[in-house]
Image 1: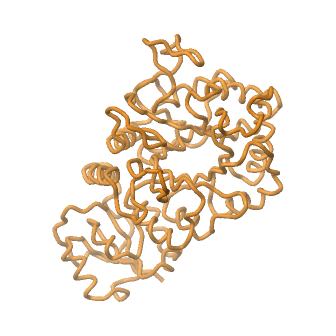
Image 2: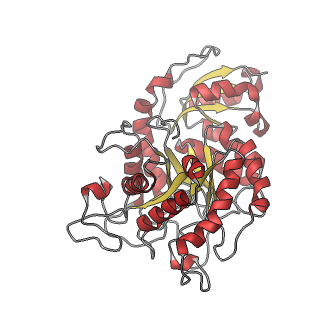
Length: 430
């Protein structure tokens, strides 16, 4: 079992639902936005024929954001572990810890041709998954069992239980011990507490059948049901990563389902005190909840804008605006413990009343190259500031620390920060 996370380290976001946005320009645009959101996890869809650039991965890990790589591989033909192992080894060296293979194998639409109708679906899926999971484990990565479609054509809890029991029967105890479970948490119109307590509380619910007076796993509390499944199948709970969470992955018109409100409520649930006991808290083995969806490339006939947090240009949508409003209220309370600096920095040389700043603390570096300056890492680790080289972003912060000392920045820039109401100090670097 992984170490227990602290209560506000479990919030993440799902990056683009494609493999095309890993250029330097994407990093320059989206890294400041991710830091502004305050997320500490991110799901990246990983291509199988090339690596996500090291620069992109390390920029995330150096700023305290943990990538979860999702290889959405085809189910109709096996991918040989020997073809992916070099990529997996490189990612492990770059600071990645989690990799998921395949997506929603419990859906008929994911199996092309006659694959779905052939006998032994779970066994045939595990013949694909097992070698790749062991390849990931061999290079020090944690393999993630793929997120299933809640409900699905093959009921997800039944598919998960059959998969775990079969892996156990195959003698894959070492893999099970290392593995994490992926999940999708879509609320649609249901409350966040729908299905809370799992099958112990809702014993009348069976695969493919939810009585009118009962509840099931198809909601935010899907982890309660998956924990029950893993306990029954392998006599233990496994780490759970919510790979995507929200109202739904598609743009549906749903009664009383507001993506902006639901995102905040999910984040609040993830921040409650972690407890092993059954109560309203999210269990400790739920390591991350990645909210859906940072942004999407516009496509003809497809409107994802109601579910994305930002336009493709980086402009915040209603969801992000709601999030920033919440962060502005919650950030002072949540970050109170780390507000007081315990590492020596030069004394504040200017202080001005703060306005409606959406960033708690910004470490302003002179240029993009300075993002990777090792001398600033201890400060970043201890104080967890947003880090970047954008003056416009820095002006949105309550406190701005200038990396490199005062001599690295113009007097005009410093005056502009003060005029914007920022508390300004400096951190000399080598």
